[in-house]
Length: 320
Picture 1 (cartoon, helix red, strand yellow):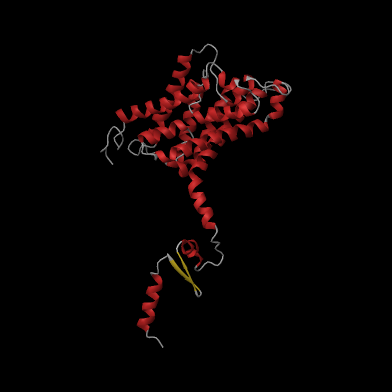
Picture 2: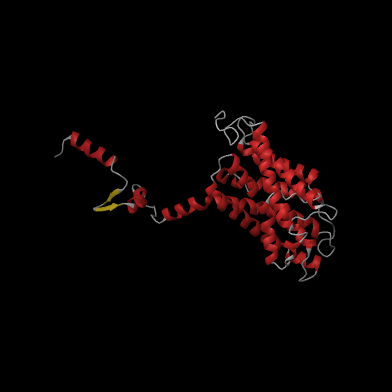
């Protein structure tokens, strides 16, 4: 018969047994197997194989949040454009459904929904230009940047594919079966108005994305904004309504390389031809990709130079 003090000592030993060695019944399990099965104690329903799923989920969760965020942006945005444009054909609808403001509203809802879904998981960038700006100015890890951008572009491809599939019949009626032109490509991607010079189109996207970058940094700056994180998507909703009604008509305010390049890739696969990439001497590259990236960097530079007091490239010490 053991004494009370010995029993107490045995109990304490069991409490501090290393997780690298787990005893179940009469079997000793060591190393990774012990780690995988440590939660089995007191939980007979635990499946040790779920640890593999958890490791995979941990690796892909943030990029997948960006993927779904961009896909939602395209679904609501391109979906609203499809509804407005295609309904102007009497064979599709007996009367037009909406106008340019409807499209602005759709893109604003898309940005809000996308950020609400992804915000607390990945930061809700859903835009390669913003991911690069955050890596440059807000210590976002550069090692995550490639996965984020890939996920964002793929989200654009899938979002466009879903909208195209839903409106496939209406597009056939609008353009003619098997015919695909810029008339419906503009539902998914951005094009400038004919009178716009290349410099004017570039500067429009540059300026609009610089404003976006400044506003996002202001809204997420704890020294400047008391906005609850859960209300950030609502603020972006209002911002994108403003972009649409103020600066959106001339270049369709891409502001986001993934929002344009992802759908453009899909259109190439869907039979729209190489014209989606050859329009105006590679417009797809210098206007909706390069201009937003440079604009986001410029907006962040101006915010940090004149308004930001925290730690950053311009102020390594800061107030943190």
